[in-house]
Image (tube, rainbow, N blue to C red; front, side, top):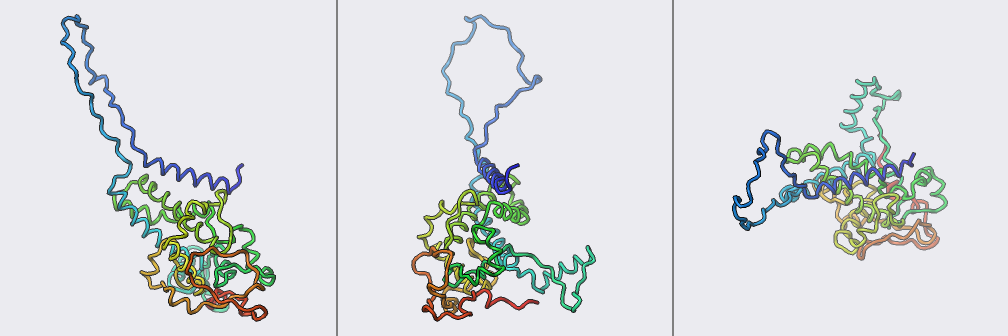
Length: 346
């Protein structure tokens, strides 16, 4: 049997290749005549009786029809972007940051649902709400490992914690999209993408021909941005969508914007700026915090005494965290912002 990573990678690549093939021009089919409609064979006539040959123009064949017309292709880009922004926001905020695990109306709905379906108690023995909880896939631990200059701490004290140990099993330390994660994110998009594109007149294959390449581009952007900005090596093809195809974007205004936007997300303890590659939903829901605001809350970071995993790859002009002089760092200085700003458990 193939290893799971190889099978998941092969499955994702096959799906994207199938979607790409869907854009190829449709093959023209030659009409077939049935025996009922085929003309009867006529007896051969003498050559002299035949009419003289007259030069005729070659028949014009219809141009191959594209799988997606121009109108649908133009509509698909903004619609898919909006759906991806919504999905990225929801996944990052309520799953990865485990905000779903708090005692709000959405969680209480699932508490009641499980109470009916599985007779699950609504309350714990001490009277607190019996919250439905999800594991955020190591993202909370990633925040706990990140300083405000985006570097990842590696000092001996941190390396002895359970949070640090939980990230050791992943070579990207929870910062990159593996092929398996990209596949999971694609499946997660289906409940919103299928009905929305169906309402716009797209068939199933047309929707997949838009969705699969779009999710691949999203993974390419994420892996170009996220691991290197935390000082980790670029993502290789055997792990996930590689970092190198879009490295040229690092000198663009787009890269500077998403870098600063995500830097603010870390500085604010993961409580704002949830969009990463597809900015939009933060602005709609009021959770966007501009650079001029969050930069005032940047904390000083330890100097040489604070060992790191690597040097962040950043564009020119992004805010820089102040550095604490050697021997001046305190216990609080070694505590990442995400742990200081963590909400109290319900």
